[in-house]
Image 1: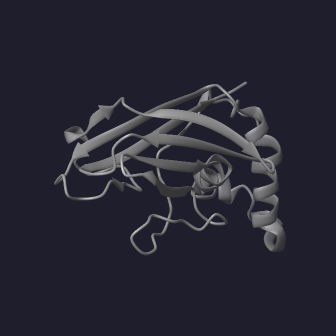
Image 2: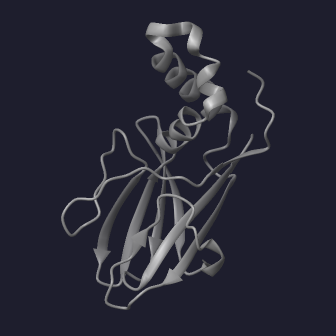
Length: 162
């Protein structure tokens, strides 16, 4: 496969919640959210898992692996991790946009996992900081959001080729 795209856009998120704090399965999901204090929240996105989900949900990509039968998903996972992820600059060449819509101030922040139907009613959120973390061969993006209430957030991440 020749990788021709200048960037990959990650904009569909898969996660689960538990209890009052947002927690997510680190094996099969992209998100891990935790309250850092009353005034801010950390959103940690597993970029390796997000890239994997991006390709594994692409019908054309999956169909190209059909002839492997028994090892199809292992082969795809290895290809994504060893070839595609290495072709993109996960360390620094990332464009992050957080979109938000106001909710009731008493509501906690909620993260949209797919593009909202009413996307045109969202504005760009600019009051956050971000940092790339590389640990145990996994790239993560840590986003610190200084508010914890009254927002519906939709993250869009572009990762550019090296």
